[in-house]
Length: 492
Image (cartoon, rainbow, N blue to C red):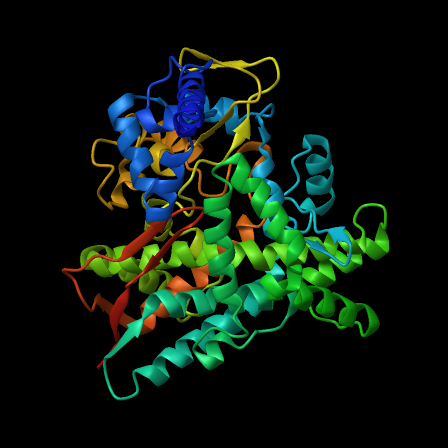
């Protein structure tokens, strides 16, 4: 007589009981995909396909402003929930997945403003570093950005020296983003633009990290596996930037320079007030600036190039505005400062509409419901529930942004009343929100202003394959590929 039925039947019953108890836990009243209510398989499958950004939009269209996307995981969409969870001074604390942003090297974790979950620790470090990231403080970094814009334009001219050329703009904009961030932070271009390709496998390493983070943080057992894998493989083998960052800080300490970059700004702060920022803290800050910044900047720039190539009238209006501003100031378009560019209404509308149409993250930015629980969208969420807003959903809210939210139309930002525009800006999730707003946004804006003005003054672009859309992978970041463009120097 076989004992298999005696083993198989209890296991089957146990599995069924587990699935049902999960489905009908304290979130049972929240609508969403059936599979998501009883396991994390829905999230894993969606992330692995790269569809999380579009699936979240579809689910909220179907189920409403609150959707259950995992056994203990809820996505909310209204401006009121956005304010409560992310944007208020009492915003919910980050979930544990953010610890992935603090790898261990030389026996210490590289805790930084992205990875720190403790609210008080985060507030203190942000306050101590904040003076270095104000609009006034980062203005001195503009010449460093200019040198990268000049090199970017020079290299594209090389590619087009025999006439219009088909260029992988997905790659070249990433090369600019990486070299520009390195120049701003440590006064060193890493060779991406000069080589025209990945250097030292740094972009490839970041791609693997973002993919693994997006996938392995979708279920507790996978997150635990991720922690084990991190202890098994030296951090510098996975992320070459770690060793590079430590080396450059040590070099600067032993051989100081007069460079006006972020590293020297932090070192001066440390020398003046050692209690405000330690050497380890500033090393961690430089690492996360380089690690997290290049991908999201590249995502935004790709989106801007793609939408402008798709919309020639928008590009022409932008170009007319840039040329008029240069004539008014008796300079060239490349001679316009970031401050000049920030005052141009149509350029501002183009950038804001790009932020709205293509957020840089595809998942919800996870927060943890406080221990006492919270009521959102009329539903009580018990303490410890993972909750958050997906920027792709929020940015397509028709009550905030208009009925045509699927259309790239910068004019919406110019036509809106002052009150409506304030509401639209309040619900842009591009740089985070509330206490967790990205501290580097003023640097990013300089990098965007200068490369947009410099490039589109010198080149025309059109999609090499207008009938084939780009490919977007919606995971931790919404990276785009298949973005070949025909680049033509203006005047040819």
